[in-house]
Image 1 (cartoon, rainbow, N blue to C red):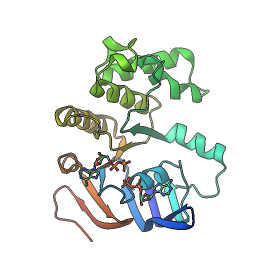
Image 2 (image 1 turned 30 degrees about the vertical axis):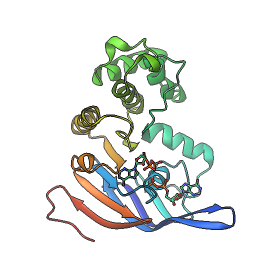
Image 3 (image 1 turned 90 degrees about the vertical axis):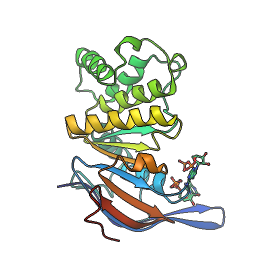
Image 4 (image 1 turned 90 degrees about the horizontal axis):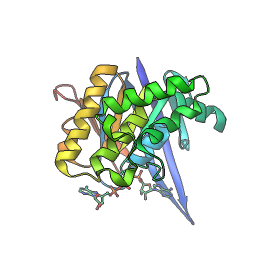
Length: 235
Ligand code: ADP
Ligand code: ADP
């Protein structure tokens, strides 16, 4: 089953008098459990696409289905609830709260899920900090952690709600190559172990190579899609 489906999606932004067509007629199905890279140069529409899949923004035209549900016509509250339960986010600048410790950052999105008790929250926090290898640094604040460690905290935070989908916008852009590779390997491991769908954007060709499926966008359009064996691509 497709965990994400976009049908003829367009996204325009208005900048003063000018309209920018950031996405033009995007049709895309993403299988549950995918490890998919969205590749393309700066300004090609990668962040816009992730924001639409993440229900942070809405399309100008077209249909988006998340987990089989059409998200158009949902109220902001309904979308916030869908996001909190279904989607985890990882950003290139990590976006951790600087005054909160690693464990408090991981706990934060769990506070939105009222059915999760305080005891369960504590379990989840230690479980996911352990998964990313940061149990010993749980009390550290972001400024006491390296870039790679901060991104690990962000991954634990994205996973703690046990989302179906994790969206990562250039997750390795602010890391050196070796650290970035470690982060991708960790994402890949989690994808293998939990069947969490990962959708990440990048313009680093070495990062693209780690994906099982690559969707290339240029100037707001899909120009190529392929899977890792390169046998099955359609343009
Ligand atoms: P975003 O679109 O996520 O806001 P950008 O892609 O614009 O971020 O830029 C992130 C960094 O990567 C910048 O330092 C930019 O100069 C660099 N960059 C942008 N496009 C490319 C590219 N095609 N190849 C290599 N580096 C790039
Ligand atoms: P990428 O992530 O690949 O760098 P973006 O999705 O950020 O690309 O941008 C796609 C296009 O949309 C670019 O031309 C960019 O300038 C424009 N754009 C993105 N966000 C906005 C916005 N909030 N307002 C106006 N134009 C935007």
